[in-house]
Length: 479
Image (cartoon, rainbow, N blue to C red):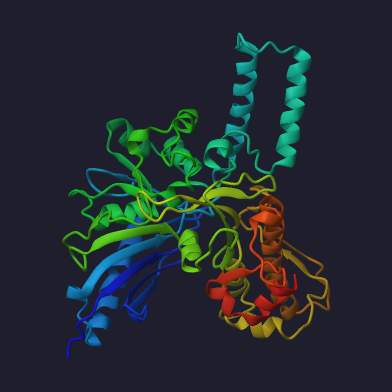
């Protein structure tokens, strides 16, 4: 007997896998599927995905989740009202408007190949400001003033990790390998196919949400080229006040506005699923970057924070309707805008590049564990690390340090050291990184910027796969 109900569905396109869920009105999952996809590491520090494989993973998940729900008697085809999308942020794709083919693999958020571009841009910014002062009819600075400015610039570079001198004012982000803009610059500088397509007017740029929506709504046959405000806020190209592409930043970086998608809110009907896809005609009615979606899912109101423990770890504090500028190495970012006319909420974010990925490294590269779940029992065999310290800077360090030149270390190893000590050191490294971010968050938000319980305790809501590890959570609480 067919179960006639109303349903919604969500696409969760993450760093290592894609998932699709179908929910009934009680938020009960009545169909789901999960697919892992290939990680490519062409060179040290490089991380890529195949955009076409990601597309096929979405198709597979949609088909098999629908099949499961149908087999259980649910009439999803007629009852599904809308689909939402959440995705890995900052990862970029450039593709041909006419053929729909990617012009290169997707460059993933944790990829650090753009270190040289970041250093070059910092130098250009420095020279630009000095030349402005030198040539201006308003400002007349002596050589001594120039030297003092250079010293203050160097001081700024030292005190504010990442040299947040130009982009932070408009976009809220430091100049870092993390964000989409520098990945796009690398493609423009190094891939002739990309340069030629831009010159020809045949190139489209987007983060993963843009790539998926364009294809889901028709691709070369009328696909909609959009991104949402949360994903756009992670490109280093969107102005946090206007919620539009920042013209000065585009000019500084030499990025043509024509290849960029239209920016929309997180909650509105963007388009409908096109023919050739499962669930044809169902509207796509919402889109958020994965960490912003977690904040909404955790119902974080002003002054409340969440931490997602995944491949990396991501802590967001809702700062309300006004952006808070960080002076302690955090990101000022958009939290959510739940409708075209809704108020915009902002957040402070601390992004940690390597968290769960360090556990995967223990499994895949060192063979210390055979599955991620084993780390808890292994680390529980000892009550300390035995003097072992681990810094998982496989791809540099993000917040609050912003050091793309940092590399991982494991020190304090003796003949006494066991696999358990190393496993515990890996878990502690995750917790200490989160503590560093929370310390910065407390300083930036201030006493009035946080919500505490009746015991004057700051509450951190947690989610992500690693939260099933009770030892990890215990270590985090003790810090």
